Length: 175
View 1: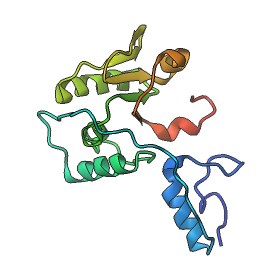
View 2: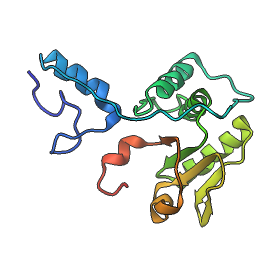
View 3: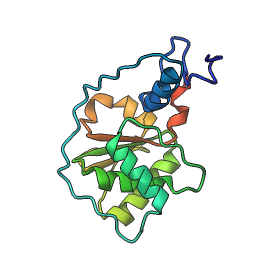
């Protein structure tokens, strides 16, 4: 049987977990002989925009991550340092075809880095929220978590959100 937190990927005492961990949780519960039914009432946004990567060819594993994220958008992608998470994220955006996307990070330097790479490899000028800027009239918006939180109602709706450093989201200091 399950021995505790190590066997059941929960982050809170109420046994809730991030939706991206659902496949792991289902596997663990089923391995314990527990019948599991998952009801997914989400509506997938239509693929209406053609995002095209330029000047970079994702590595095979980055392409697999992108395809997985496009098919199962509420997923946590765990890649090691220097694995090319930014390129994988751009490839996921390209694969998804969503009309509007938000890239969130808790570090301003990562927000600027992602905006630069998106500009270079997607050929779009991303909107930016943070460092005193609030530019949200773009198909791709890059935002620091704190700046986005301060004006969350004014952000508008997005078809896809990519949260960089999402493993930190469980912290009480992270929104």
